[in-house]
Length: 128
Image 1 (cartoon, rainbow, N blue to C red):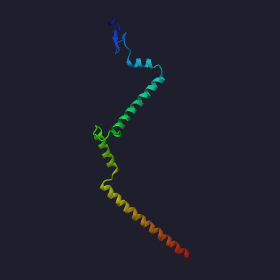
Image 2 (image 1 turned 135 degrees about the horizontal axis):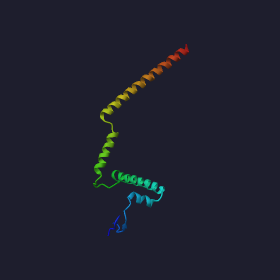
Image 3 (image 1 turned 120 degrees about the vertical axis):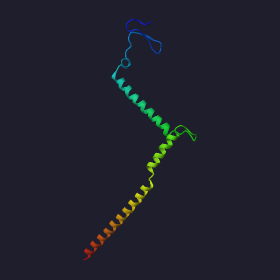
Image 4 (image 1 turned 60 degrees about the horizontal axis):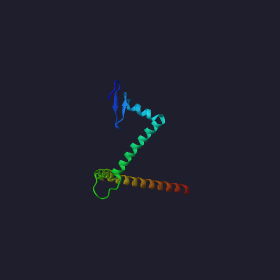
């Protein structure tokens, strides 16, 4: 039965506590007791979130479910198609690459011919 003032309250485990209930944050900080445990809880919470995200990513993209259909096949196919299209050049890019190769080959041939011409001229002048 509630008493006057704060009154009684029933919690999840059937424990009746008298008086006003403290806020959850106040209760947790009183139970933790030190700044070290607060920092520890913050880092373990971050690790738990990172571990769950990593596990989920592994299951979605890399885990081998065999040859049968499963719910992650459409996602895997979409990502694989995007990955392949990123790494595979388009026909326009292939034409541009060929044009660059031809330009570089012509420049290299011109530079080689100029170097040979300069060396023959220098050897001819040194013989005189």
